[in-house]
Image (cartoon, rainbow, N blue to C red; front, side, top):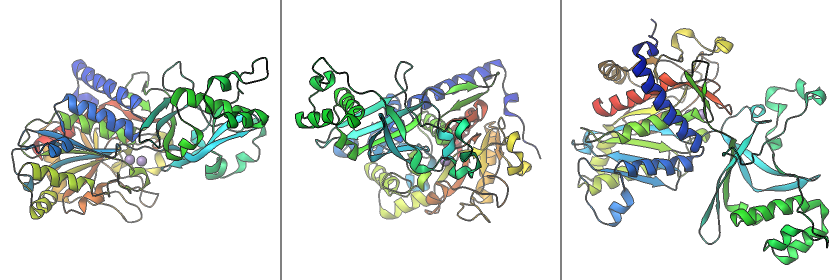
Length: 483
Ligand code: MN
Ligand code: MN
């Protein structure tokens, strides 16, 4: 049984719509490379669509009713949005979920050091990566530095075309005889993912004093120490630039979250422009269309919900991951504000819900065809992917969606002319993966893994098909309307 090619559904006008949706998506993922940036943009788009901050609603003791739209942000790294439906919430919610964290390199808390006139920053990688892929390419620094006075400084270096980038070196092939014999997971080791950020000492004036030191208000004693030590002159210069541009000092790295991510925008891929290459399609290629479908859900029958969470790449842990009680608490708050809350009704709302837990799937790649079983593989161009189960070694750790729920979804997709395919992640016993699906399924709700096929998953640049992105968006809209 073969699934149809989704492109064939579309005439010129239809293809135009797909390309224009992909353009908006490219802008989103080019601007928003961290969970914090995604949340900030989601709030902006939500407010533009008439969403109110749930915490304002609570503080002002306002009531909510059908047709109202609210959002709640969890520690700047996760967000949940509600478009209140006509039916009581205890009948169940229609929930879209995706994650907005992506694999990357996090700057350590004490990162800066100078070695032979070069200044580097130590990193600890985040999520599962092939480390050898993250070297010898332009990288950008994104994140925040929290100061002791309670304010934060936002940092983004390396995205505009006239801004500098940073990066991690690789060994020249000429001297790589030993390296080339190493196993792939040892070619570049985690502790060697050090980012080069500078190589120039501060300019000296005629008295032999650093001109930058005179300008900056670095503590005089430190300045003298730095001058005395030629060895740290480059690091001192970097610190003085950071002080001048961002008002931060070396100790402020202790309370910073800085991420090293591939620099530059997402781009069209293929001579026919049918695909997009970019950083972090996993999982913003599901988060973005979920968010847009949610924002377009007005006066639904059942309450529409969109959850965008952090920390999926490291196990959905922590206060901002899916395991956090934040989502459940916010459902309770919305029920309370709309006069529907009781502990029992909350539990009913959750267990009666339907969810599309969206995450990327591995798209068939002719270069690596042997990792798939071809009948049960996701393909570029065949639409949104439903994965009944994920897991590894006998479905272990998987949310195995029920046949009945899949039956219901097939009808919704067919009724709304959405192209979909079914798949599992690779051949049996070859590997596997997990998502946030099983966590929500703990409430007893219907959950299925769905999403978009990706090539090069977890590489600095991943690839998706524009029509699959568009079909995902259509599937989310159909789901919120009809589930
Ligand atoms: Mn993912
Ligand atoms: Mn992932």
